[in-house]
View 1 (cartoon, rainbow, N blue to C red):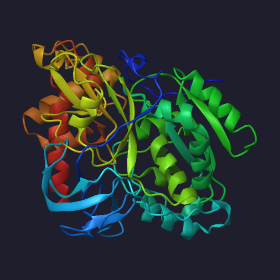
View 2: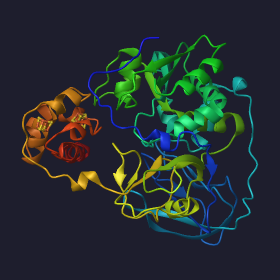
View 3: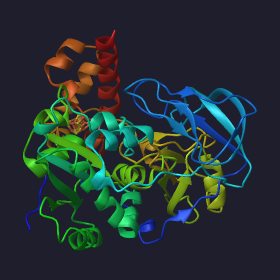
Length: 437
Ligand code: SF4
Ligand code: SF4
């Protein structure tokens, strides 16, 4: 089978063997659960409960604040303690519903359905009601993504099973343990687009996943597997679309503009749960790993549980971490406190004894061009970084700075340890904010 890929990218040490062979463990939440009303892109959800209310597991506690929004569900039964601002992983303060967990996990009943008998509208309504958002980290409401202007123009529904970020293994475990439900979730999504073909995109360092999917789609004529060359950022939306279909997307386009819809593994699993079982999104898989972690593994974590409790259940850190990252090492961000809740978009917590990035000494650029060769967007990161530092937004935009996907490849390969991604990201965000005004 040919190996599909894109131009540029890097091959960092993947660190996946720390957690990939262990079965997903169930995390047990403690007394206090925190549910931010903004766990997605779009309007914040509006609380439906007040202090003192009793809630059940699976109960909607905040409704969608608009079409581009998503409701929030309680993952435990208990009592609403307060609605107040609480810190989230990014460090921001967000309105949150705080629930005292009674430890009983009394649950609402769910309405199961045979999805093949449901209309397109009914399927989308079940996905919207379940509060599903892009669980790879983006947090875009899934019912919106699955409602493009012209559904008939969608040729490909792509399952992003690349999991190209080093250390992350949650999608891998999900496929190994519940690949049948993930595949059925893809079939449900395909039913929304007449004439669309399903693509399961997997990097070639996951032969077990590829073998599993081959068995699961044996009878399918509209789903195929594309083995991707193992390379970061193979799972980036634009790189994935290009590698699997040859179609190009730029920063002013949506994947739907080139006939593609991309969803990650856990999002597709959540679609199965919502449409077939009637269950809302209230838990997710989180990879807890790194050399400072006692027993690296994947946990099934109820949303709202604090990372600190998760670490304690794992036996605490085995060494003082020099760096804690929320998400993958390439695109995640440093955490200053673990006393923040796991949300719908939490993918991983990584803890390392050392922080090589902050220890590295920056030296002048030696014009080696390594950053340009590594850039999957075909940019000249060294030059863009200089423009960003000089505040030259005009030239930054003219030279394609807005096409940066913030993958971090340029910083990774730079022998001078220039903060390229950081500089480019800062200017890009400033320019995006300017355009929104
Ligand atoms: S400029 Fe942007 S897209 Fe290119 S390598 Fe750097 S971070 Fe990645
Ligand atoms: S990789 Fe670093 S040293 Fe080399 S050209 Fe780019 S910025 Fe300069």
